[in-house]
Length: 383
Image (tube, rainbow, N blue to C red; front, side, top):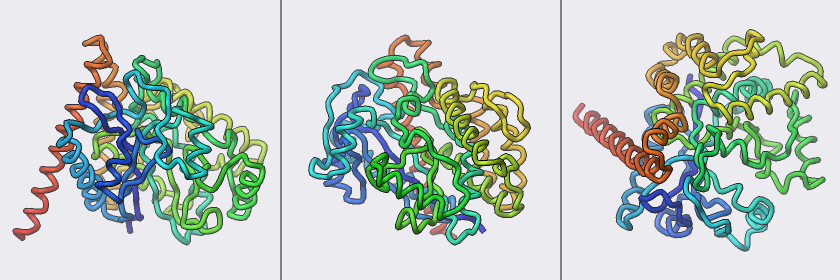
């Protein structure tokens, strides 16, 4: 049985030359289901939870095409990448100036939080192993960043990072321990809010976190927050499929990573090591040399992912989702979006020309998937 999946897709919109504009207020007036971020230059749409990958594909493409059509009528477009690629004003454009949380975020972090990303929520409701799963998936968050990295340009500069977003994003709190039980998590969580390390339940900004209708007490899903915005929907879904296969493999086998049975001090050291791994991957992406916890060797991130893909493919076949997992092979062969941005930049020598090329590529890919979806609907209608 497949797990429920829901995605939060943060995006940029603006001019066809690559300049990001503060449009979330205007878009919300047209599309009331959209969510606003503290600054109006990024906005979000959210898919409904579904076990079906076909439904997830539809949930991802349909709202995007509607947004595209509206933007096109204004001679505007969607812009790829997870940081603003061209030089921008260092001022904030509040979306909800009377909201205490939004005001705190903008006052504290200013434009550092004007980024886009993909948050992947996987339902594990009523699972007694919730925190074991959370810890196990946490070991692999650097891999998800490597596959999705798309923020090598920022403020008109080549940053030297594959994910400048994750390098610069203000992760909060700076240290988050591994949790062995729900009660331990509740106590830690409440203490962070009490000491004002966190403003509220939403102010837990980490690569992965527990999520649910009433945090911290009622939890029903694991939220992976590390991924950059990836424009190709099929590649987004491939990361989702990889995460689902990992979770399914742990649930089915009960073979938890032995490294998680270590003492508290050792687990705290592991948390510090993982933070360093994420920094390395933010810098070098798929080419990053990381510690492979499965065999305790140093390997390129792409090699670790390739090995993981091979080990999980039989399960993906059994679950009937191998077609959704296979685009990972294309990412491994041809690179993540940042890799492709840099390749093009080296040919043309200008960030503006590079981002304009990928704006067109982004548009064409979405339109191709729109046609694919429409053909699927017609095919079903004719059955």
